[in-house]
Length: 87
Image (cartoon, rainbow, N blue to C red; front, side, top):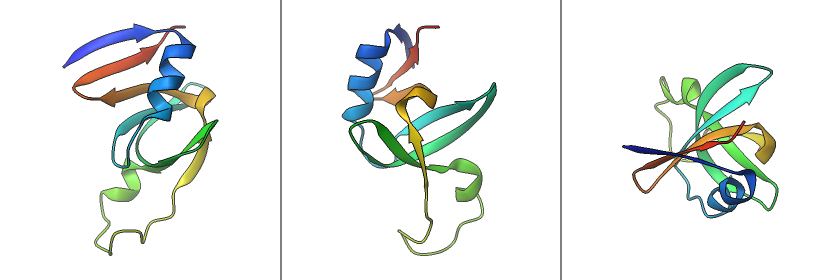
């Protein structure tokens, strides 16, 4: 998988075009956690932390995700490319 470092404008545009199930990494004060996209709004993304998915055996839609601002998303995997925000 190829990795690209992009500025916030490009990164946020990529986020706005995400589909359910795509992989992102969230950063809260230096603590990172991987998650899957549930859906995207204009300024944020609702995600399901992968730790919640590990032991899930329910029906699709049973898990309630967490809403995160675009500002907390530091990495996105889309179309075989890993996009990272410039720091």
